[in-house]
Image 1 (cartoon, rainbow, N blue to C red):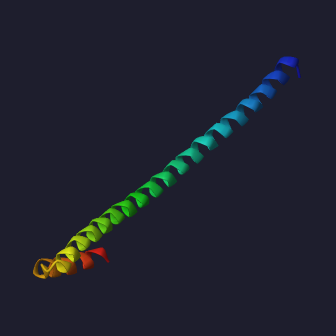
Image 2 (image 1 turned 180 degrees about the vertical axis):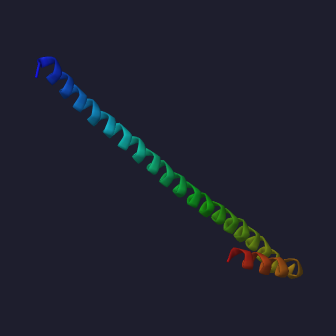
Length: 87
């Protein structure tokens, strides 16, 4: 085996190893991207639910103020509606 063949074989082997590592890296990054997408989607749904709960609590607070100041007719029905929406 000549020196040229030995060098070609050595560099060819290294090139194959680098290519394999590159392909595995791309596959791992794709999987990581999918996982990140799932987490973001789930967190977005949680954020929307929290915002809706916050709005319901704010409205319940306003309706409770109506009840405290003697305008209970304006506050009782919406209060029950927001309470069920909060749960």
